Length: 468
Picture 1: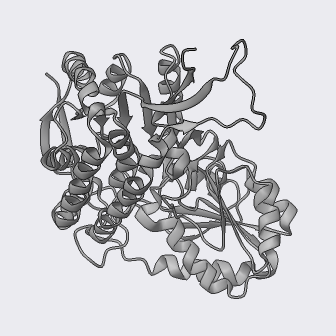
Picture 2: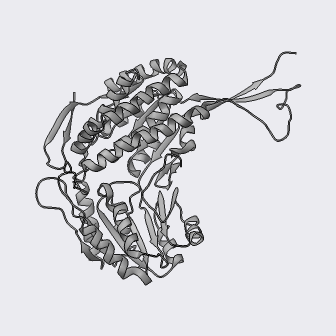
Picture 3: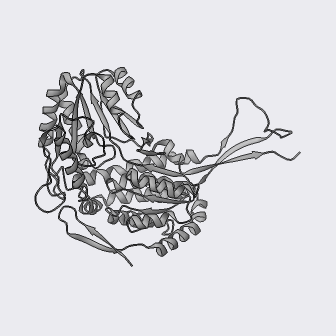
């Protein structure tokens, strides 16, 4: 049996070594899930909801302990880990309040009251909704509680069972999720944690499953979509982004906007699919904006993620440092100017200095390729049309933001940008009430919102006619 080694990215030390699932153990878990699904779906919604409500309460009670685990294995600063876990019950409440309405049978009411085609008499037409069945959730490490609960909570509430594979960089957190769900009353075969890396994920896709929900990179997402395509099952892919922001010349306080965007770019070390990854600022305010932005970034405290004052911890994956170093060097070779950071921090751990590049353009990787780290390029533009064209010059389409005093102006720009989410005078936020979706390489399908709940059910059409 292979072993999965869990490392602390702040120190490089080994936290734990765990037996990893192989093809045989995954097949057994999938078979057990398939067997358990009908009984779970047969329970009333109220019973399933009571169990998820208990899970939500346990999560609140254990927040501090769970945050320590998450911080140790991902490097997320403890304050940010507590914040994520503390906010997760609110997302769970959204599902508890809205899933049942999406399961209710619906009487079809066509505009023209005609019988079904071919039927000699009146026919009642009804739509009901079935759970998907066996759901595979291959999750992410950067926001494991948010990303995981966005999938497994509505899946469980709608009557599906879940094979949950946390990222190998957040395995201990994934196992903690399973323990809490089981303690709350979810049967062990209804929610099962799969331990392992890419091989475990590939083995999951070979099982008898009914849907795949993945959060991660575009490259892995494309492989998952190809593997699931032959099964003719739904696939939801929440992938990366190269999220742009345009700061127009009419903003009232460029310095305040700069400080806010610095947080939007560097929170969680920039390791977020919706983190600000490139900024376009109008030439009229560029100097003031760039100066204030750089000052804000230089004020961020980098250090031990277990310390309450730490804002920037280590990168979760040491390998990402080479990507960031490559983007910095590419930009400098092509004429960019470095205002802050630019290199790995000496000493143990996967630390990279918060980095600000100006005099950038779209020949540079930092403005085209996903960074997923504490680095930003700021490009000067001369107007709205130039900014819009540059914002669209990407294969990604997750979020886009415009800062302006004029709502109509911002709406005109954002309506022309290819993105699943549009922000006016804000950035880097997610609401459970709105669908989370992408365009292009940013993904397929939706999580969150009512649209996200509907991903977990299959409609069944009923043609009902009483006997003569």
